[in-house]
Amino acid sequence: MVNHVKLEIAIQIVAEKISDLYRLRDEASTEEEINEYNNKLALAFEERDKVALGDLTVIDRILNKEGENNG
Image (cartoon, rainbow, N blue to C red):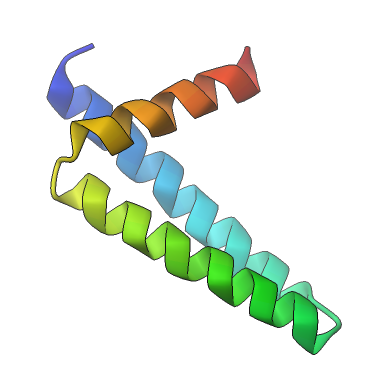
């Protein structure tokens, strides 16, 4: 797959992940759950930043993980 296509797909996957985590955090009923989602969001934002910088290792990991989830 061409690298710019990989980048676009990885950006979409990370954006959806962040969106889902925000939704789950908003639906959380305890402070512990909220903190857990805040931690996951922090990691997702780090991942987003690495994707934005074009880190092919992270991009490939995201794409492989998504392929495993759909395969």
